[in-house]
Image (cartoon, one colour):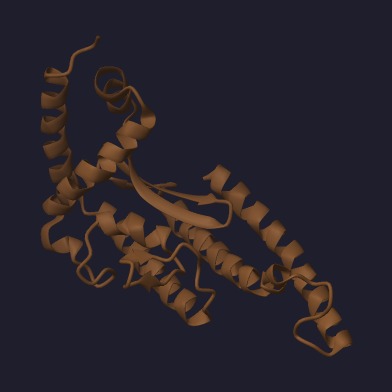
Amino acid sequence: MNYLKKDIGKLIKGNDWLRSRVEEINSIKKEQGTSYPTGIPNEVLNLEHRVMSNEYIIELANYYVSKVEQIGGSIKLGKYLVWSFWLNGNKVSMSLHLSDDETHSKLYDYVFGSHSGINEWVHDHIVPLVSVILGDTSYSHAFGSWDLKDVSTFFDHFGKEYDSYNKRWDIYPTYKKEKYDEDLERAKKILNWLIELSTKTELMDDIDRVLDTYFKVVFKHNKEY
């Protein structure tokens, strides 16, 4: 959590600097009487959109911190899994990771030999397994018909539009305020839903029991080299 708070602080500081540049550019526009002043590259003229985007990212990150600090600093799904939320520059990401150090170490030593391999495996296999266990609780009003796998996808394309022609999310944000408003509202719903989910004791116990058996069998057939 401290790392995230530091990253939020860095983003706020950087965005304040960008905002001051926007104010300078607006002053030059007014002075020259044009929206495209001489000597100012077009990419610099788009700084105002970047400032807006950063403000939404900052609000979302602060919302996450404020909610998660109330429940001990993390959103856990049982004893094995935790949702990780982080900033990569001015981009936000969230995904499910193993929180149990012993299990993670065994998977590294006996099975995958890499941390990235473990993370990919959790995303591709454990997340769908847990989603099935959740049953109808995974089809929350926060998602529509989404399941847990779509949580990571959603945060990765925060502020971006879907390109139906190429069947992919656009690489760059839309910089449309309406899109950011919509995504921010949904992101808050998702976070609230995940926090509520993590408090369902019987459901979390069921997830633990399934994964207890799962990992027991995995390590039975994957022994130390």
